[in-house]
Length: 559
Ligand SMILES: Cc1cc2nc3c(=O)[nH]c(=O)nc-3n(C[C@H](O)[C@H](O)[C@H](O)COP(=O)(O)OP(=O)(O)OC[C@H]3O[C@@H](n4cnc5c(N)ncnc54)[C@H](O)[C@@H]3O)c2cc1C
Figure 1 (spheres, protein in one colour):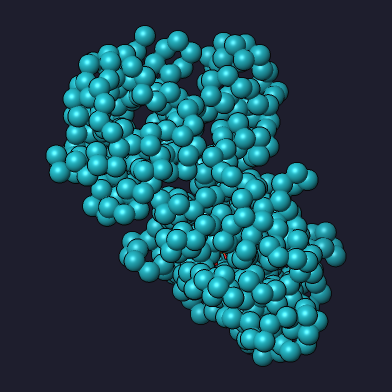
Figure 2 (cartoon, rainbow, N blue to C red):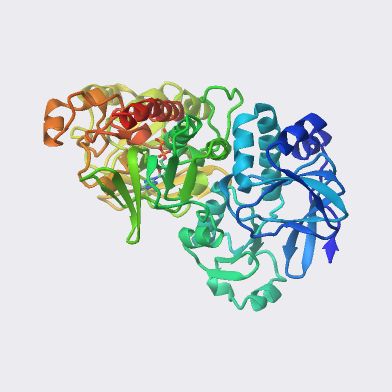
């Protein structure tokens, strides 16, 4: 039975037109030249939900329905008439189709296999713009309406549920959510899949597989995130990390004809993906959310043919011989002619359960002009005793009513430059609290109140403070490199001119030339973005470095 009520309230005509554009005869002719024209029967299924390696269809006569199957029922998602085409972003990644496409009457289509489809979007800029825009808008619509192959049953009070939600959201995968705390009529669903409320989060994958409190990797496997990727093939470049630096490297590598594979532990976007609004990235005068920026970059990388493996983090680098190999788990090693390390850094975070709730909404990891404007005239807290915390406190004190500086140790002398300590001591707007740590953050949509504790006396204090700057330093994600490349005292990777003669001697640098800019002490292995010693912790610089590294990858490949 088909529910013929379109679930998508397509109110804005312009959005509908861009989501389901009708191609001109000339455009269809260009597509037909790469594929084949064939008749379709009434009821013929052109694409089955869950099908891997899906062809691209343009309807030239008749009608094709797009439906979401659920058990024996179907929900009508869209209708394609002559001139319109099938597909959404899964076509680029090669992930299984989310929906079924079926001819609802006798007709004709142009059919293009995935390989020819990718060649089309890479070479025909007019069609590429039209198709890519439609695919992205269709995915956004599926996400907005929770139309997909995943049902998540959970509770907002359960951290596992929040983890799964974040994983699916940051991977741009649509899902419908059943909230056990709010929806009372869920017993049928629980009975049908033989799960209990205590099993949450429960992920029902493709209407059949039931995963109880699954790991991110189990979800990725179930949804076939990496199925279309050949994991053993030797690559021109393997990029480790899909933050802004890694995604930029992937876009430039693939668009310049290199065979590029990206390995990512969690989801595309990295730290930037967790930013609610990036306002200082060139070209976005009204700002862009990190999630959107990451989603677009990810689609762009895939359009050019880069492949991205999700939940497949690098565990070890085998650097003793070429080609290098990146170990992912006991059974998987990915060989690479060159490598770009873009694993970024993790800000040291206190272990408050609700910390992520306030990130960008009262909790910040950087004190720039932008954050200073947000807390103008208010009381703020800066946590940390290093130079970055000192600079932040002095900077914020210019415009804030009061800066409470919370330090766990008994003083600043050991961790901060003398000039900063003097400035802090001389500034009446800064109140230094040593031996002190935050105990709790409170609020709903925004941080409203903070409780801290004196570690010596045990006394606690609670104040209505809406802004906390966590400046406790960043830890580079370099543990997996295990001595393969030279790092600085804090573990950040040294590159190019930052590598001393001693570093090169210790690393047994084998070439007559010096390391390229962004090249590590291992020839053909580069480091970009926040993982690199001397980086500037900005999206733009990470993107810039990712793209620059590719020009050196070309040189290394020809060496
Ligand atoms: C909340 C927040 C807000 C920010 N706001 C701004 C802003 O407004 N403007 C601005 O310019 N900058 C901002 N920044 C800083 C900016 O996000 C970073 O400078 C930028 O993301 C660095 O990019 P990157 O790709 O080098 O590293 P990251 O973003 O850290 O990405 C690294 C990626 O590598 C992955 N990874 C780690 N280890 C492995 C492994 N072993 N194998 C595979 N993958 C791995 C991680 O999961 C991650 O996805 C913000 C940062 C945060 C945390």
